[in-house]
Structure formats: C-alpha cells, structure tokens
Amino acid sequence: MGYIFESTVNTRPILPDSLRYIRSDVPTAVSEAERAWLIGHGITTVVDLRTDAERQRKECPLIKDGRFSYHCRAVTGGDAVPGSVEEVSRSYIAMVDDELRQTVVLITSAQSNVLYFCNAGKDRTGVVSAILLLREGMT
Image (cartoon, rainbow, N blue to C red; front, side, top):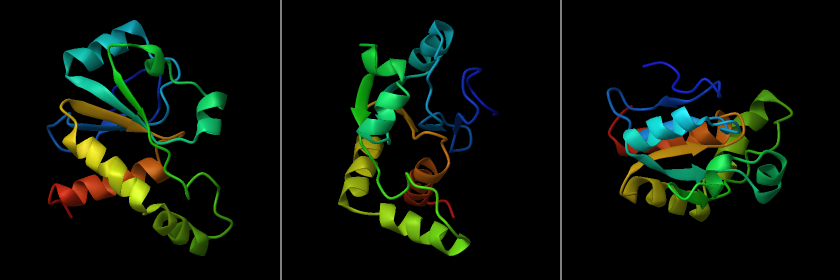
C-alpha cells in the first residue's frame, strides 16, 4: 500500500497488510473524504507527537473533530535539526524517555487503529515506528 492521503506526503501503514498503526506528516488539510476513510477503517485515535508551539504554527484540523480521540503527546529531542551526522543518533536516543514510553503504551493500548505524526513524519514518527515494529516482533 502506498501513501493514503492526497493532502499529505508521508502517510502510510507501518505493518504489512494492517492499518493498526498509520504514520504520517502533520495532516493540515484533511478532506472530509479522507476523514471518512479514516473512520471507515477504524482509525479514530490520533496521536500528535509535536510540541505545543509546533501545534500552534501548524494546526491539525482533526483536533477539533469530535469523531476522533485526539492526544497531544509531545516527543522532545527531535524537534531541532542535528548539526552533524553524529548528532542524529544522539537526538534519537534523547527522545527515548518516560514520556515516549507512555506514548507507546497509549498507541498500543488504543481501542481503535491509530494515526500518529510529527511535522514531517520522519524523525520522531520514525522512532515511534521503530519501537512499535520491535514490539510487533519485526526486525
């Protein structure tokens, strides 16, 4: 399966043949058709990994849509661009803290399928995806 939305550039499932976990860049222009698709596929838990300041700069309209259970769970340590290749791995390690653990528990225990994202859907979303894949037994 390729990308899911026309309004994003990085939205896709992380598990083969499953819509349990959907990673994305921030969906700022989700159409009603895309919202209906999410609901129709049981994807009604939304986890926003961005900081309050990031959410203010780029709002996700799903936060105001009562059909979704929207959770603001800032993952820190990945919101700055590393200055060197060596700093990239350090920034990923800095993300792994108790807040991230609680976020993973929220995602894995959700009663519905989950859409989660940061700004670009790469660094913070990638770290969360790697942890979820490990928990699913993937290597």
